[in-house]
Image 1 (cartoon, rainbow, N blue to C red):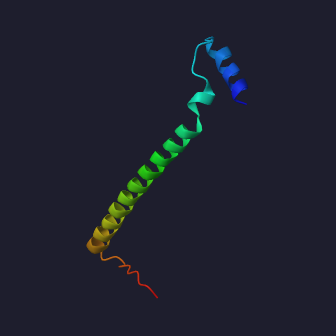
Image 2: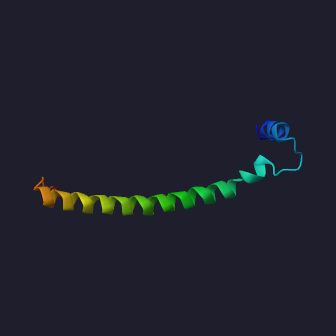
Image 3: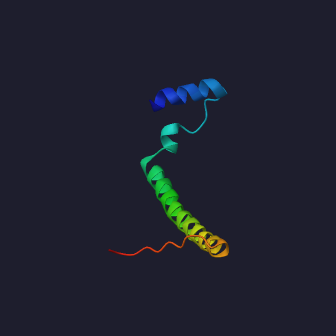
Amino acid sequence: VFTSLNDTISEITGKKDFIPVLEIASFDRVISLATMIGVADIVILTLLGTIGAFLYNVVASLVGGVHVTLTDD
């Protein structure tokens, strides 16, 4: 699969001296990138959830909306 992809890229670009796809998509690089994206995703979604909850509470206080309380049964 990677050999045919390399051949297709070389036909399209007309270059023979490029970095092969298999070297770019090595296991270590893919795992490192997936880990970095996962950590960034956790941080960003936590921040967005906090900001969203804050904005919801502010708007609910201003317009007299429904107050939601979460409890443990």
